[in-house]
Structure formats: C-alpha cells, structure tokens
Length: 169
Image (cartoon, rainbow, N blue to C red; front, side, top):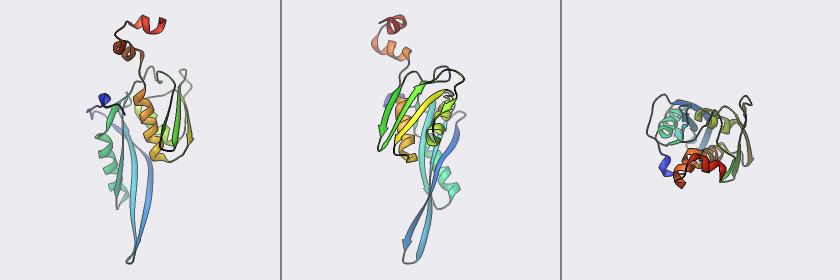
C-alpha cells in the first residue's frame, strides 16, 4: 500500500464486521475456542482501514479488530459516489476487479468487497472477485486496489501539468 496516503483522523468512523471465525485448539485438557474477527472502518468519505482481532470472546475480538483498523487508515479517491477508473489487483489468491459505474447503478459486488466499498463511501461500482473467496485476502485486495487509484487532480499534480492537458493529452 502507498505510505503517502496514511490518514490519522478518527472523526465519525463507522465499523462493519466482515467475518468472524471460530478457531478450536485441541489440547490434552480439552478444546479451547477462540474467535478471530475482521472489521472494516470508514467515514463514508474516502477514508478506510481494516483490522484483525483475536480473543476468547466475540465482543473482545471485534473490539480489538476495530482498534487495529483505526490505526491503519488510508485515504482513497471517491468521485461523485464512484471510483475514478478501472483497477484489477491481486492479494494472495484473491483477485478483485473494480469498475466505475453510472449514478444510480448501485453496488454490484460481493460481501467482503461490499463492506470495504460502503465504508469508503462508494455508492455506484461494478466489482468482481476472482480466485480465492477468503475474506482476509478480499478485504486486503480491495483496499490495495482503492489505495492505488489516482484521480485526475492527483495525476495533474504529479506530472506538473494543468487539468486540461490530463484529458486532452
């Protein structure tokens, strides 16, 4: 992920539980159950983060995951409720493809990707997950794809040219 896009704001962050997993460890004394939770936080305006929490109880795991997500926020471009351009990214075995959509299309995507995109404030998007459906890798791949996107203003600034040259060549 791009390190220059780190954000430290905690204003109005909403959390979404993506997945919860019960893990069993068998010892000679019996079975020990623990829980792992993946949480995505976002302000609905382009700031998102994800976290993983593990604990003996579900509520503690969710609280740990939320705290971890708040420490790992990134800023992503959201233009008029959609993303600036197409992007295909893989993380581990998960591959995600994101495509901007016209206003009113809605969110055409799967569960783990939907939580990330809703938290970022994206309302209209076409998305497809290929390969692994593991929620850990899907969340990471989706956030990686969003953080690699650049809007026209950023491209113009990076190239040192005006906005009209970005679109006209």
